Length: 168
Image 1 (cartoon, rainbow, N blue to C red):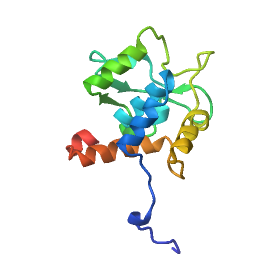
Image 2 (cartoon, rainbow, N blue to C red):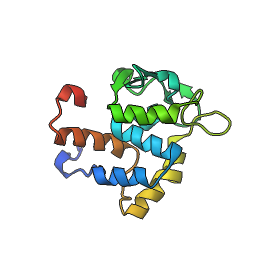
Image 3 (spheres, one colour):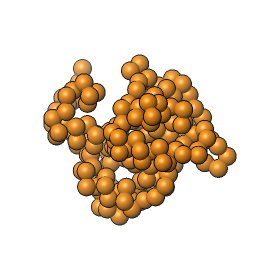
């Protein structure tokens, strides 16, 4: 097959550094800030995070049950996740759990929703929220979108020599 050889070391997969994520969190507020904290701390897919409801936080807010996601093209919740391993529980550090519990307090239904109660579409949020901040920070480049938060968490845990079971 006349396919090119792929050298994974030559592929560019950008991930923000810890100080970049901290700066992003500091310069935003409320919903946007909570989403960045959630994505950076958990490594969840943005479609899973946007589908979270307060009932998905168990164990005094220290664990998130991932059971659903927002459909890619329409603002609706679907129960089928991207992979079979997508249905899982994600543990949170105590300080992140406390922060998110404050954010959740008094909210019903979806945590991240528009006025009519439907979930945000991640592409709309990326262009409205994330891209502008990344440009202002000088970090906007191809591949530096929502998935960069997953790479951030993975590389941060790897740098701390975290056990692979926890990393996964």
